[in-house]
Image (tube, rainbow, N blue to C red; front, side, top):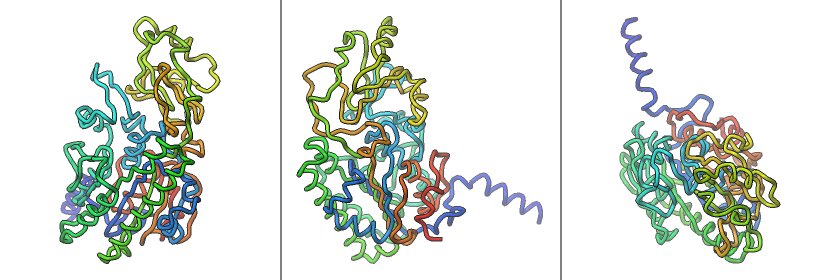
Length: 409
């Protein structure tokens, strides 16, 4: 009998990381259904504009945060990957929307280069939640999410769609609802839904524009469509909804730009990324000139060697981060040369600036009602999701304790 017990214990230890667990210690009982919704660019204070009654109703009957801090840099790809891995960008490997890796010389990763961005090489430094869930035998489905349209660690969601911006918001919701029409044994238990219109108009028209307000109303109606669809299927009462944003949005203009070519010749450097923040590699032989130019004081930009980036940003150790990182004052963007178009809104600024604060709303059987959480970092969403789904989390930077006041015993 003792030998049998020891054998069983060894089996459990060996396979424990790959099986679902009924409930994590101190966490909620896993719900039959968890849906993670990202509303790209939904700044936390947009909820106070009175334009999103469906989201506001979920918050009032559930949980909302005063603010959720994005991780640095407060950009789309890095923060979407942080939300589903619990790792800050410097540890997840998705350190920017645009990046390079010394192991792949001459290759540039960017959101717009599908032939490069769909290479698992860029994503394999972290394991997203759908991979962990699938390995535990839990069906997942992703209606768009950065990284979900390729195999990471050889695993993809059971159901997924290749990102297509022209796929309308209502169509995205209808696809989620269609996946939930599958027989119970095949129905996904964890789903993601990505909505991008608020971010699009935030860039093109600015966060205080009527266009953004209209986009908020349409996106809220989309959330209402999801809720109504869940109710019609008898699934709303058992569904935990977690609605987040990746970052906020700040007003920008052509009058608020720092030009690198005012500081040193363009031939001295290679800018890997530009915008609210810039990451820069000096050209060979120009290291001292670049350091002297960038590390001096600038009115609306601060630059660091990667080793000297402030600790609160948790950034600069990954080899994909170039030798110099510059951050614009909120509202000021960084450009290489004059003549480039400047949006009316942007993000990527200091993640602790209130204009970068992101939405967090949660509702469902795991959550208390009427709770307002103090501000927290978005790495804490991952351990919450693993608890809701009932899987063992991978090593991560988050703390479930920060969200525990939102959870029922």
